[in-house]
Length: 221
Image (cartoon, rainbow, N blue to C red; front, top):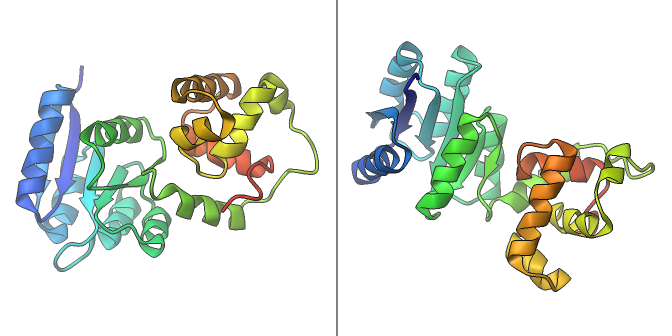
């Protein structure tokens, strides 16, 4: 089985080395390369052809957004996940526009980061929970709504699952949904898993896109 190759581009050596070690320990079979400057990464990554690049945003010289843009131009199939302490709406949207698969804050729990890495390796969009509202707002502005007619897909899900989907479309996390609907967080998680399976949707972000197109969550955000 081919080893998964991951490139980490980050000028904070302590964070980069720690991330490399944790990925090697937790994930197992992977080959990780480190770069402290975007210019070096731009030369080496096309040569090494990693499966995934984890790129910091605030870097000396060329920044991570420009590096993301240039790498995608040269390697359209490269999967990129950006990491940063910057949680501004402008930065989040610039990252997605550059072609990144997602954006996670460095302050997130390592388990969330590991899940994000695995999801990005599958080609799924990955957005940190605190950043999701920015993306939802932008999607709501850009995506046409289909709320004048009921999709046949919605016939596959129950009334309770529709209620959960309504809150998911507003960017609410599982705990907030549980509190609003007076059910347990585990029940919310089970409902979302069932919705994803019934609608054949790969992850939560794609589910949000679907829900917005179907006219859910209109009064949110």
